[in-house]
Length: 449
Image (cartoon, rainbow, N blue to C red):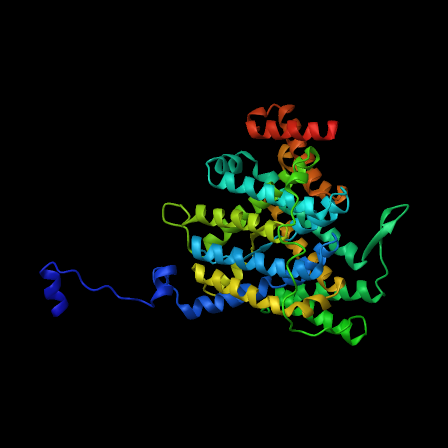
């Protein structure tokens, strides 16, 4: 009755205080969620992507990076990225160093092209800065729309194939052969056998929707190696190792070399299209798409992602990107940035598990690489296979990444093939100005570098 009288007199009614600070920061009630639900969603997302704290340091160690520093950098970069995404964009998305991009960093830029890992980090930094510039301007939309969808899907699939080859090679399932180039390894050896078991465990557990399937499989195979005497127990908890070996170790001046142009573009394109696809997919599941089709805070989410990559390079990791595994947390009810903040805090806690990370053998992480690679190849299903001017450049892009052992070369050859096929089949109107420019740059790269 009193409320009715106040309303009649024009006196504003008292607003509910909600749940205090968390309600004001994340607008939980507006998004139809609760603190308890967001905490559970954050834990779910973290467990589905926690494998990166074991996999990424192993890959970076192959580039000559100190394993302990790489571990801490991975945890810190992921934590800061998640906190930025949660507090700034209010999105339930977890971030960490990108799978595929870390393999390109180590096995192409460092091992194949011969650059130091410091120069490779410089290229990551520059690509992140470019991504930020694109994100803060309208150039991003122009570039995203001007690159044909077939090439975008092919980039993701090609990175998957490249990652899969890395996993098979690391496990010893595929080995070099002087006559046939590649050959099946000895599957009776412990390493290849345990890697294959790890992959199959992940595939079966994921199909059955077992919570934390990848993490369970990696730890399970590690325990098997421990029982067989292949792994030495080094403890579980410790003070985090020093970050000094990688902190601000990037060589930006060295990355400004003309030979690094294609590398910077490769980091930029794969990161940008992967991020856009992930964020749009998660937005649909998290009910962040408004009635008019606009996605709530999409620009802020892209800015948080691009800024995280710059910060990650300063800490010492490959591009930090949004993880599609965030969909698991959204499925568990995550709707706001509180989910991402929980993920970030859990990555901070993970820094105290350095001895456990150091115990994880290469064959255990190889199984995870192979599985993630196969998921990434799913984008090829969206290509117009009957339209050869679309499908053939896409195939060239995807296939040439693993065959040349270079994401950059695969992208370059795919773009050139697309422009040539469209130009000489009477479909030149499908070629945007940006495609002409990029194809010309890539042709110059192959001719002069």
